[in-house]
Amino acid sequence: MKHRLAVLACALTVTATTAVTAVSASAATRPSPEPRVVAHLDLSRGQTPENIALTPDGTAVVTFAAARQVATIDPKGAIRILATLPAPADGGVHTPVLGFPLTAGIVRAHDGTLYFLYATGTSDLTGLWRMRPGGAPHRITALPADSLPNGLALDEHHGRLYMADSALGKIYTVRTSGGPATTWSAASELASTGFVGVNGLKLHQGALWAGNLDQGTIVRIPFGPGGRPGHAQVRATGLQGIDDFAFTGRGDQILAAIDGPNKVVSVEHDGSSSTVLTGADGLQNPTSIAVRRGTAYIPSAAYQTATHPNLMVLPGVGPMGNSGQAPHGHGGR
Image (tube, rainbow, N blue to C red; front, side, top):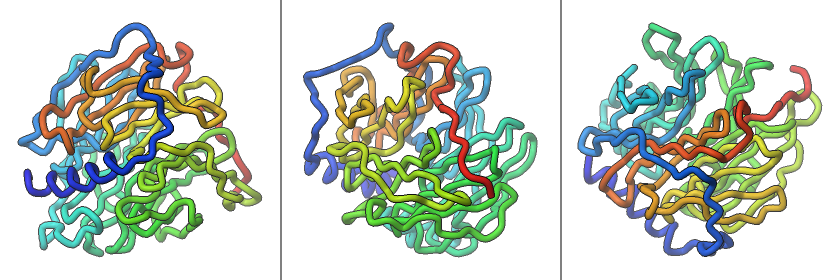
């Protein structure tokens, strides 16, 4: 386990030290009240939270990347393992970029169904998985063995999912019922420059938004007729190390998890950005963010710090009663 995390930490260190950052470290814009850690996680057990979805009562549903698990963390910090995915026969050594199995993006439908991504470097396990309430996980869509499925977005209204491939620089789409995936976009703005390209995905106001860890950008791709992608537009730069992000509910304002540099930043509608949280606040390499009713939920995986993975909450980031996910309806199917 330590060796596997060291591989990722090394890559993130390179990302952090080579970042050309437009984020002003001195311009902290922390909301009030203060952030707090609601759950301390166990690094020795692979409890490295990679992605997050929320239930209506504020319980976090997370993927533990290194443990191949899906788990819940309730508002009091209690952890419950929902599933452990099967290990690849070769141990995952052929997983692109990382060399270990990665349990990544997760979303939750209104009926409690969970969809999540698993990358193993093998054709029998890599792809989109589904788990209904009380049921067992099973793969519903296969993705290429040389892909690194990472970020995931759900358009429940149209019954579609969108999946980021961080290795091949693509976004795939598939119906929520499963089946073969198709490439939705392979725009150059999604490509990596050596480590990880397109990563986090979010649906917002008629477009699919994507973060690119290597390029340090947030990209907006509008939906065209029939749900086809429009021209990719870079909306923010200087965010090298961006993992996943969330809209706050204040227009196009975004909170972004900047993994290797160990910070959370606020990105405004004009692309400007400022630091909100750092390691001094308890961050341990944040990986993703979810916003509900004005509170941000921020998992940290400690990939580089290698000390205390955790789940932090930060109140006061958006309008109360707003989920942080603005309407995203688009063309018919």
